[in-house]
Image (cartoon, rainbow, N blue to C red):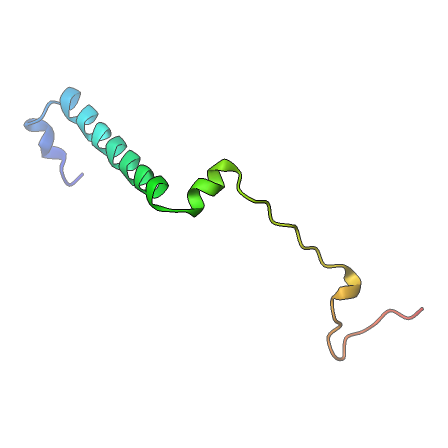
Length: 72
């Protein structure tokens, strides 16, 4: 561990909660900034407009040139 000696100066009962608190605050800030500054994220969270699903049938897929075809 690179910074293992820090625990000689900072008690783990103080340092670990401070470190985890800083990570939680940073993560919350990033997510809050995304929600406040983007248009698409609000729509996504609110269930926005649904896009129609596009499915391709076997007849709509063109055959490759020289591909084997089933004989009837």
